[in-house]
Image 1: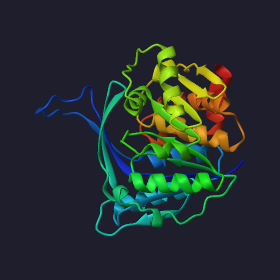
Image 2: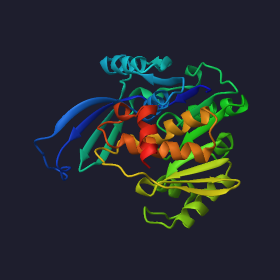
Image 3: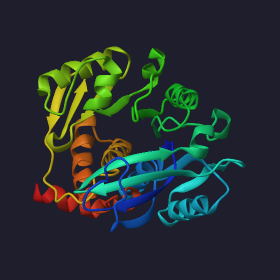
Length: 304
């Protein structure tokens, strides 16, 4: 299995659980609070390493207690965090996550994540690696890192979340683009909803492929996922789950996808595995702490 390298965000998630989310101007008592490691980059790195891939994390934190906690969490999970840089004068990223009825609403204060530069990503990509990026760090850094990895012959994955406008040339450095139906709509200017026909999803994925991405994976929540390659489209059904918290489910999918691609799986095989991993993750609270092990995913697949 080759190494997975994740370049992205690290946050401390402040998770507040309540029976419902407050209305504007309302104060709601009775919520339970938890402080849990998160950030799309960190979540994806934890997912990959727990599923058996040697994993390295590249990103930025402040010089504060949250940074120390995130570094310790990465170390405890055997993620190489030597590429995580401390930036003076900026706080570590924080996400306020309100969880009610198994759903969530998230507000992010990006902090040091927005100050990650290309120069801070010092490790040179290798041909046998899988490099992963998202849009929670500066676009210029993401573009440069993916272009460098692609030029070196590494396999590249871009999770277009949260969606930001980007130059068309970016996707030419992307082997696998992963996004949900909302992000797919934003990326192509096509009107899509959670109820859009699969044929419409596939056609929209093809639009994105024509922009440069070799493979497009659309994650569709309870409807599973769709994988679109030059050979055609494959629908990957979702697995049933007792939902506790959906926070980080998409990141779990991306990290699991990267781990399986690093092991030599095809994109469709990797997406099936990633669906099972995401089904495991939503049955627990939090983002990074909810990422499953390879044994748990194998058990879920055996029951499918």
